[in-house]
Amino acid sequence: MPQPSCDHELYGIHEIFCGEDPTVDIVAVHGLNGHPFNTWTTKETNVCWLRERDLLPKALKTARILTWGYNANVTALMGSTSSDRILQHAQTLVAQLEADRSLEDASERPIVFICHSLGGIIVKRALAYSASRTSMHIKHLHSVFVSTYGILFLGTPHNGSDKAKMARVPQKLLGSLAPSKAVDTSDQLLNALEEGSETLQNVTDQFAPLMKQFHVFFFWEQQKSDLGYTRDYVVDESSAAPILDNTERSGIPGTHSTMCKFEGKDSPGYRLVAAALIRYSRDAPGRIMVRWQEAHDMFRTMRSTEAAELIRG
Image (cartoon, rainbow, N blue to C red; front, side, top):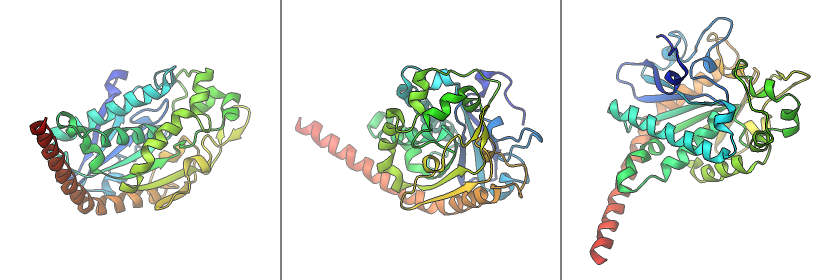
């Protein structure tokens, strides 16, 4: 399948594999300065494990595998109103994913997200946004929350990253996913990404009450990246994989950039990620069916309450 040739064509939902009668949607979301295809593709051999026939499509024969593209350059994501920019991307992800699934007559199909780096922050904010869309005219947006069964976070900086480390060589650090792109090294960006930043804390606070609804697997990088004057971890283990009840966690033997690229079935980390996706995909349909029954009951109760209030009013 050819890749889009222009930047604007990279944005939105892209189907890269569809099994016969799919029972689950796998949605891959790249991170800062990332790319909907290149983030998941090995540089040397040009293998994208999400669509290589002998890799994930073979492991998940009844899945529909999607990747989502968005303007992830630093200025667009972390400008002077960084929290608002994250919300805008989150709202767009929910709207575009809901529209795509609606057109496929698959609004209630289970979803499993694969997120790299700051893509995980976007997904967390998107699920919090979707969870809040329950009024009559926008309840279709609630479907993404109800349908989501599992989330794999690969190198997501849930608690931020060390500002001093970032300040040393910000261009190499922030360009690790797409070194050819220009990056913004402003203090605003460093503040937004530093450990304990208000932006990341707000997203975490909104997502935390929802976590019990999902199966969550945290992964951290086990190899240091070349940051120019030193080698270090882009996202530390404690930030990438917080120790929380009812979550899974593991290291992947790769750098921040390579931890989401697998050349073959024996590539470090592939079997671990693939096994989690297989397990989630197998278990998701039964649980999501129950959640949809609960959601339909909730909507009926809400509409009845609204009608009664109108009559009383």
